[in-house]
Length: 173
Image (cartoon, rainbow, N blue to C red):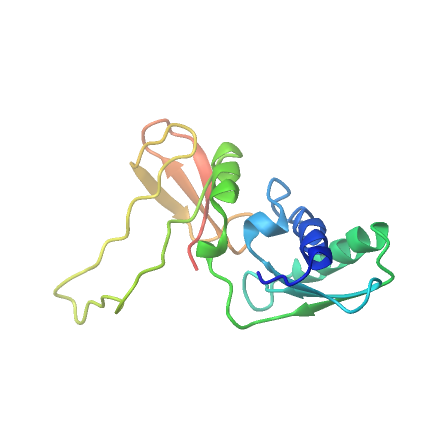
């Protein structure tokens, strides 16, 4: 998120404070989808918004909610532009957003960013294992996948084998 003026920083804060329509426990800033705000004068604003994935059905609701929030702040002309590059990643979720997901009972995505080459396993001789998904209720790493999809396409349904509670896991992208 790049801002260049105090007005743009203020408007970015307002746009970023809009709750996510699918996960209202998170703001769009915590989700990491509001990329920039550019002011053209005092009453014309362009907001750059990156969807969590191409074709995300919530992008329209996010755009309308951002427009409403900025109109309520006195901005007359608001354009929300969908930006696909750089692509959104679950690594863009802020630490506060991850904490809120956990408190809400959703296992946050595991951090993916790596430096250097990505390790690959060729053939069937070796498999790479991902770090465990921890239960947001009891913290146990002893969990199992029930379904690759849950209430939204970006979440999977899992169950904790320790406390037996089902929970959503925000999948890594």
